[in-house]
Image (cartoon, rainbow, N blue to C red; front, side):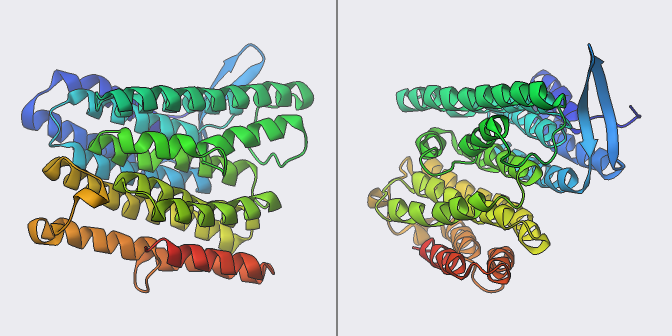
Length: 386
């Protein structure tokens, strides 16, 4: 243990202080929290910085390496952007829960053992559901309960797999696992639920559109990206992920085309983008993994931008169904520009961020001899622009 504070600690401490302040002081503290935590992260050295011993087991609360640092920086950026968007909100509860949610995501990516991962995995579920319930509609309440059940079940699978893995190997280390037995399959399924694998994805398109505009911006950044990190940590180079990822990129397009709720359309497009990351992790080469992580960075930015834009539309008009809207380029020209930028990025237009990261994954697919996967990814990238 050294003098570095675990990355999640500043967010948790800040969440306790925010309700005590008002006005510009509260806004200043909200902005300061991710900045201070990022500064602390910048100075952390690779290795184990915080661990505790319980009985004969050592739990690693903060394990720093290249992969965790990359996602740590990503989550600090996501938290800062979401907090800036939330400054207009008078409901302090959403900001407090958002900080706890972001802190839980940081705790998960810096966890060095499976038990610590499980604790933050469940904290992610518990904190994030309040961002759905904060909308205070019957639909949000019901969707939140369904979301919580699925997320807690994912945690149960993770715990079961962890305990079985411990009994078989005597180790709790959160490192490469591979699909080597029942324990790793349980953990793989737990990650798959949180990553919205095909047939396990309905919780995302059911719950995210029911969240508050601020809640949706937070939600699009953390839960699924923690799952992406976990897959990259435990299952890189797993061939099954290539096919799962390809399916994830393609099938949501057909649902999105016939969907009328614009925030639900973004939910389907999120699954599409996650598919590129999953496929890259499955390919397992350095280019593919770098592409997957790069796309995670890009997705947080352009998907956050799109959710902010749709939140602005919902706030200004009180409607979010495409059939009820029209001519917004005249009344909301700035929001329209942001939507176009986000759409170009998500569709991998040249000179936009998505073009770079998607090209990395697609090039890796060709290098590894998966030509038809390349075609599927090309179709999926073009189709999402609809």
